[in-house]
Length: 297
Image (cartoon, rainbow, N blue to C red):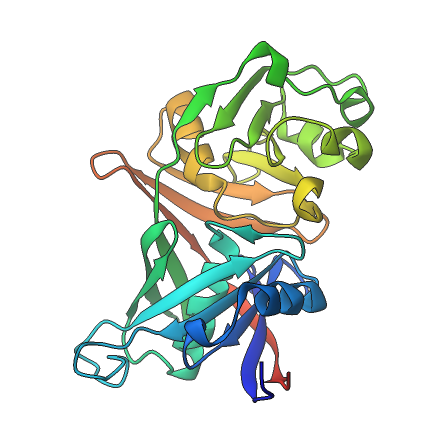
């Protein structure tokens, strides 16, 4: 690939504070078809954050990209790479990308559509006005990921990680086969000292550890996500796993709207809603842009 200047940004998702939440790198391309998979994987490895998003505007039949007209919902092609592999869906990097596009007026609309390997994804700008300032959050519209039973052979053996904490239930996601391990309490989730060697030997792409939030904390459930198999020991704040966790916890708690706390060291907050009729999940949160620059290779 010949040298060119490619604009990038790093945005912390599901937080309003820099250096919290989950960082995502965003690479703005003229045409995503101009770069190959090896280059994207190399760039993702260079950034070495949980996920790097590569996007380019969708060119319409008239030869325009649609984002220059405020009456037209802009569309972008998007793909996501961890430092170790491409993933079919990434929530925090999509939220980070939408936040950056909205913040810079690269998308002159309050809605953005992303064309991905997981189908059409929608991000909306939700404006909040106070006496002091006007801010906004981003709401994602993602497909529901059904939770299914797992085979006895798939139940993870992670005694060093659990350190005596009992397992309430083990299930798995349909899309990626991530194992969902429910613990008695969110406090147990937060206190885990994961042994990544034993986690890496488990079935599935990764292990989602979750539990009910303590009373009075303002959250419904706590979660952590370990996926050393794809080069991420712990994903600080993962949006896409909530496509499965939302229907899981909505059923258990008999609620349609939830607030999730991801109890990693960086931590993050997600506002969630289940739309059973359309089989969709809405995932909302804040974000903070921490750097911008140019890729020269």
